Amino acid sequence: MFRFIPKLTISLKINGSEERSCMTMFWKCSIKCFSSNLCCRCLFPDSKFVNELKNPNVLIHTQVENFVKNRCELGTIMPDDALEVLDKMLFMQPLPSLSRFNCLLESVSKAKRYSDAVSLFRKMNVFGIRPNIRTLTILINCFCHLNRGDLGFAVCGEILKRGYEPNTATFTILIQGLCMVDKIANAVEFFVNMIETGCPPNEITYGTLVGGLCKMENTGSALGLLGDMVKRGCRPNVAVYNMLVDRQCKDGWMEEALALFSEMTRDGVSPNAITYTSLIRGLCDLGRWKEATCFFNEMPLRGISPDVVAFNVLMDSLCKAGMTEEARRLLEVMIQQGKEPEVFTYNTLMSGYCLQGLMDSAVELFDSMAAKGIEHDDVSYNVLINGYCKCKRMDEAMRLYVEMLQTGLVPTVVTYTTLLGGFCNVGRVGVAQGLFNEMQARGQIPNLITYITLLDGLCKNKREAMELFKVISDCEFEPNVEIYNILIDGMCRDGRLEAGKVLFVGISDRGLLPDVITYNIMINGYCKGGRLQEANELFLQMNENGCYPNARTFNTIIRGFCEMGETHKAMEFLQMMAERDVTPDADTASIVVDLLLKDEWHREVLELLPTFLPKLVTKADNFAL
Image 1 (cartoon, rainbow, N blue to C red):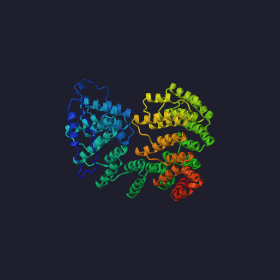
Image 2 (image 1 turned 90 degrees about the vertical axis):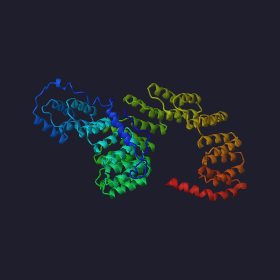
Image 3 (image 1 turned 180 degrees about the vertical axis):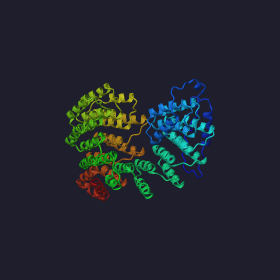
Image 4 (image 1 turned 30 degrees about the horizontal axis):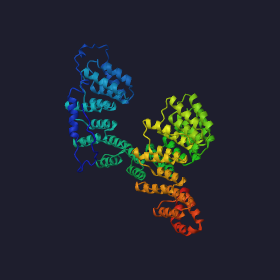
C-alpha cells in the first residue's frame, strides 16, 4: 500500500540551492501501488457479465444527449436525476459520448455525493466505457474528498498507465487531497515535483497550498509561496490574499497584515467582506478597536456591505472595552441594514452588559430574543448565570439554571463551573458541593477548571480540600502549579505553614517548577507567622532557581520586616528593588510613605524617591489610558 513520506522539510526556494525533492520516489510509489493488486481491482473489475444485462428501456439517443448537455451547461441537473439518467444511458445503443458521462459524473461529485460518483464510475467501467483523463481526474477528486488520498494517487498511476499526461487540474486535486489530511510537507514536495515535470501551477494550485500552509500556521512559507506565485506570472486572487491576511492577523502580525492589505489594493485586487472581517478581528484582538471601527466604516465606501460576522466581531470588541451602548447602536444599524442578528450577536451584547454589572439591560435583551424568534442556547443562559454570579445574586442564577432544565437545554460544564464559583464566593460551599455531585449525576464530567474552582472555594472558606486534591490526582488530570498554589495558600491562611511547606516541596517531586505566585504565597505565610529568616532564605532560593521576584514579592517581604520593626532590612530590600528595576505599585508607595513617617530612616527613603516616582507616575498614566 502507498505510504506517505513522513516529516519532510518544507522548502519553497524552488529555484534555489535547497535539498532536491524526493517526490520522484513518491511518484513512483504511487504508480507501483496502482500496478499492484491491492488498490484498484475494485475500481476496474472484470466486465464479463455485461452481456447478461438486458436493456429495459428504449430511449431516443439525441434527446438524451441534448438533455444532458443543456442541463449540465446550465448546472441545473440534480444529483438524483444525474444518477437515474446515467443508469439509463448505460443501456443505450450506441452509447452516448464519454463527455456526457463525464458531465453527469461531475454533477454528482459537485453535489458532494462522492461515494455515489465512485459507484457510477465502477458501473461505467463494467460496461466497458473507457475513461479519459477528465473522468479519472473527477475520480481522484472524489477519493481525496473521502480522505482516501492513497486511492487518488493510485488512479493517477492509472492515468500514466493509459498513456495520458497528468495536467494541472490533476496535480492540484492531489495537492488538495494531501492538504485535507494535513500532509502539508508532502503537498509541498509534490508541488515541487509538479513544476520539475514541466506542469505549470495555476492560481488554484497556489491557493490550495497557501491554504494548507496557513492552516498549519506556517505563515512564513505561505508568504514565500506568494512571492513565487508572482515571480511565475500567476496573479494572486483575493482568496489567496484573504488566507494570508487572516493568518497574519491570527498570529498577531498586524502591521504585516495591514501592509499586505495595502499591497493587494495597490496591485488592483479588490478586498471583500472576508478581508475586512479578518482585519477587524485582528485589530480587535489587540485592543485597537478605534482602527477596527475605521475599517468597518470604510467597507460601505468601497461598496462592501458588512456581513453578520463583521458586526459580531466589532460588537464583541466594543463590549470588552466597556462600550456597550456603542455596541447596542451597532446592533440597531445591523437590523436597519437588513442583517439578521444571530444568537451569537445577542449573547455578545448580553455578555457586555454583564461585564458592567448591568443585569437589567442584559435580562431585557435576553427576553427580547424570544419576541424576535431567536431561540436561546446554552451560551445565552451561561452568560446571564455568570453575570448573576459576579453580582453575587445566586438565587437568580439558580432560577435560570432551573429554567434551563425546564426548556430542555442541557447545562454544560461551563454552567456548573460558573455556579460552583459563584456559590463558593458567597460562602455557600455546601451548595457548591451538591451541584458538583449533581453535574456528574447528569453526565457532565468535571474538567480541570471545575476542580480548580471548587478547590479554591474550599480553601478560601477554610474547608478540607485534601480529599478533593486526591480525587484530582486519581483522575486523568495531573495536578499543576496552579492547583498547588491554591492548596498552599489555603494552608498558609489557616496557619498550617508546615503542611504548606510539605506541599511546596511536593511540587518539585512532581517534576513541576514553583512560579512567582507560589513563592509569594510561601513568603507571605512566613512573614505572617513572624518567620522572617525563612522568608529571606526562600527569597534567595527563588533567585537561585531562576524565578525572579516581582513587586508583590518585594512588597510582602518589605512589609514583613517593617511590621517586625526591622526597618533596616526593609530598606535593603527597597534598595534592591530599585537596583533590579522592578516597577513599584500602589502598595510600594504605601510602604514608602510609612517609612517616611519614621524619622530615623526618612533620609534614605528620600534618596529612593527619584527612582520610584517616575515609574509610579508612568504606571498611573498607562492605567488612565
